[in-house]
Length: 414
Figure 1 (tube, rainbow, N blue to C red):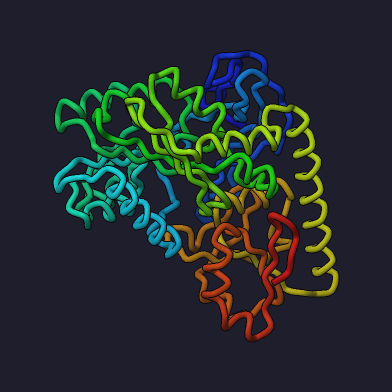
Figure 2: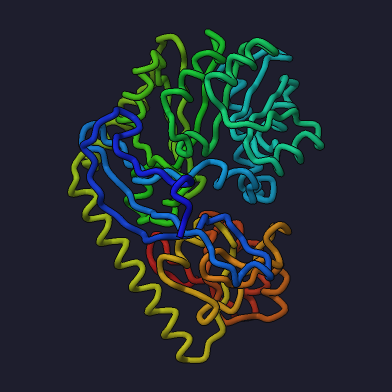
């Protein structure tokens, strides 16, 4: 059930405007993956939205077939990177690299689009840069401003870019981590980048990489926020439409495998890594429709094997819980129909989520301390992209015989 005004069916590719779209994966109607429920709301009817994935046969962009209104997705947002040591380290390294690449001067403007609670901007602030954030989540923009990170609560558009340029100035560095994949009107967004980026500046963006998604069967990365699943081939073509130049690209391990791209307004020396990654994509046949039909079969297999394992353990009277009330986890739970009859509860480190219930499957969420208190036999690691950090943190749980189950990239018990 959903309000038709909140969801629009995609008729044309958002990158090239082609209507030559192949529907290759349907994960079923699902609730908003960050739509956690208070106890007294869990018996109300929830809104479910289609989760269908298409491949553009003309430009190669993988994208969702339906667009849910950003007001539904981002007005109140619960993912906060500052709660993860992995992300704090990652953002600090990104800031150092950006400053080194550009030889910035103290006071140069850094704009972060989708700035969340200001975690990345604080890394630039520590390097004496002038910082400004843009984020549509009212709760996060309020928190960031209270913490001294100036943040505009809005979606980034070319109109907003003009206002920022007039009020402040052009930015030497514009960052957007896990944001471009969320944008429906990519042309408007990139025009905004062009308006706001200084001639000698860099636009640095990160997004989950399609090849990692395919190779590791990361179907739980697919949810309504993530409208596009980029490989470099269609991304570079999209940039060229706006006279923007991809000068470097790096693969980074966060979120199950991402790419960090460096974009300039003027042609310059292009890193050999760009050519190398395009060769890799050709080798992996990312423009071949068969690649995506094979992926669908692998997704089905993951679901079958995971459900079979969990029910086998339940039949042996083993206690199973989940770890990480993440958006990824909620996709796995809803697609595999894993509810409180299978997982007694989920633990999570973020206070916002504790005491609430997962969308769709209505599993209760508790603080991490409950894991050691109860010592369940098995814990399904739903936030598998932080597996190393979590497993290291939970040494005591494992010492007492607790085991972690990982479903992606392949089923394993740790």
